[in-house]
Amino acid sequence: MAVSKGLKDYQDRVAGEKRAAVMDAAITLFLSDGYDRVSLEAVAKAAGVSSATVYKHFPTKADLFGGIMARLWENEATGEGGVPPAGDPRAGLLQIGRDYAALLQRQQTLDLYRVIIAEAPRFPELGQELHERGKKPYLDRLRVYLIGEIEAGLLSIDDIPLAKRQFLGMINDVVFWPRLLIVGLEVTPEETEKVVAAAVETFMAAYAAR
Image (tube, rainbow, N blue to C red; front, side):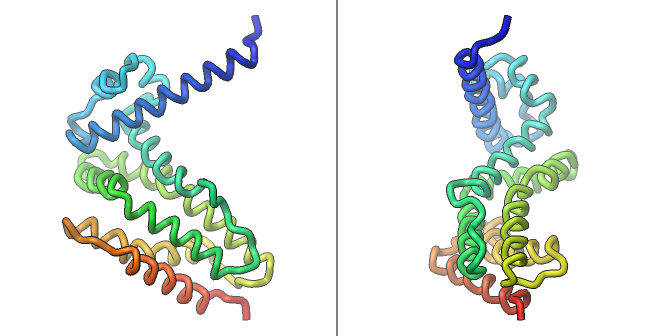
């Protein structure tokens, strides 16, 4: 018997809520206990769902951690701002740069990266999941935007993968990595804005169409 649309929508909503609850519980446990000491069964208990539900969404612990990283980056990369319209490279890059800096400054981002660095030597799958699922939505968003500006004749870029990593790298090298290494270090909103603006100007100096 065919499932009605209303029932299907309800089932999808419940499944989505359970998936989110699992990831929320896992984040709390990973940050408090470390990756090694957390089991999928413990995540299920903390989330108030069955172990079968956890395994249905995340067959392995690496899949679960990868899902967390993907959600962390995707929520910011595909938020209300989306891909800025082409026509003003400085304005578009400022929007993307500010969004990126805001994500990097979230305490949860910092804490999860510390888990990865601490556990990656014993669990290389964490680094693999970060490479494949974390940050990719942001890089994809920037790629689409750069292509639009190239097609509009306002940017000239031969190597888009290199250019987009250069742009993001100029930001995270100042607003993220020092905070990861130096406990208690703060980067003010004014400092962050200065960093993003400088990254935009450096990028434009290199890639503005002549």
